[in-house]
Image 1 (tube, one colour):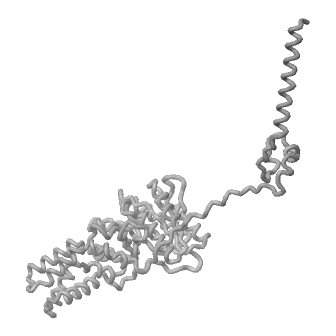
Image 2: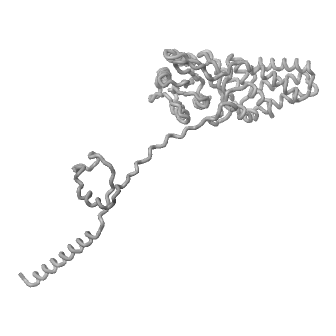
Image 3: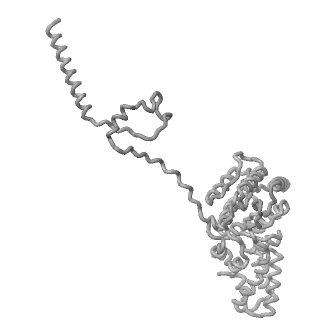
Length: 393
């Protein structure tokens, strides 16, 4: 072996020894990293590692701290924050400004005509036209004009305050405070009260049911909703969203186009099992033909009444449709035994006289009215507050 080769081997060996020594020195001086610890089952450990197998790591960390590392468990998800509906009492009075605004011309026009120094036949005809434009209906308008004629003739007063008082009294007679406007069915000892809600699509029926749920919750009632409008894809989802806001459950089908009567039956069954106070059932509002509508709603009624009698059938109508809404009302009144009206969109372009016209045509009272877009802008109908709102301004 040559002297140069021997020298090369010696140099490599010396470098290796020096490197090993440096590594050993650095490793000895470095504090081992404390591993993340938590309570784990054997099944949580990596494959091939037993619960006792990590003895070296345990020995290295034994003196690092007298107390174990605390592992904070993730916080439980907070319960959803539920809406608290506004109290029902006084809602219509609070919303009166909206109704007043939409009927200002009605009241001002009538009062101006009735306060003239001389009320001749032309003026009475103008008063009648004013009433008809307010959607009062022909027969009620004639009744009101005849009553006012008689009172003006007897009293002969032109004082605006007295004229307004006369008009208020006669309008109130037409609205009829004697009608039963209770929207809360009588409770039953062994089952929920059942409310079926009907109306054509597009009048805000599902939204109105959601708002009604808020009214009932505000009255401390335990409510359950049944999404039996299975033909409109968004109806069940929309209804459930309204219910979720106030903690009201919704029974619905996961299949579009499911049998509405089956969903309604399941809703009533769930309401009985859960011992709720009221079950409200949404229904489809297609009016392609009266026969199909009659068959569908009739089937729902028959199937539901195998479990419980339907206590209330509420018809939702859009007040802005005016006299056209009366045609819809007639169809539904022929199909099911409507017991009350929910009149939506009474603010805006609606004419206050439609309340009288609907009640006259159907022979059933307006029980709730919608006066805005807010979730609590549905109020129990109060004849006195309503007439006062018509005559304000």
